[in-house]
Image (cartoon, rainbow, N blue to C red; front, side):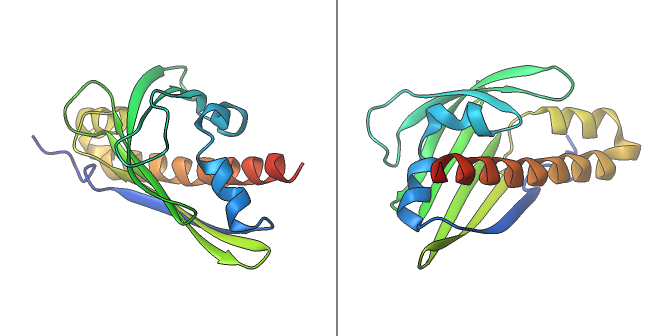
Length: 164
């Protein structure tokens, strides 16, 4: 089936924040606090005790249209304090998406890069593109723009909370 460019669709942001890298690392790995910061993720909890490759956590998301999901995420990279990434699974064997943070120390500041890449599994973005092929590019770009805006909001709220 044609996925209209959904698989591999990616977006990202780059933000310089006023926190040292170790302090921001503590935020990006505080899965249980994402509900305080994210416009979509309202719940997160570690399912495994250590933050390492292969560790899992649960997340629950609520979208602007009111739709809610519960997903299990598997950490794919945990290189403290520089990289943290995970794949998102919604009940299929293939991931829905991959999220990743890359942190670069700038002394008392940190350059934060966050990316999202759509996986091959089914998702609302894929369903929207397939059901509306005439508007597929618009639907995909709209969702990627929304995700980038949400990343900026989450990073800003996280940084603010960690500075407090």
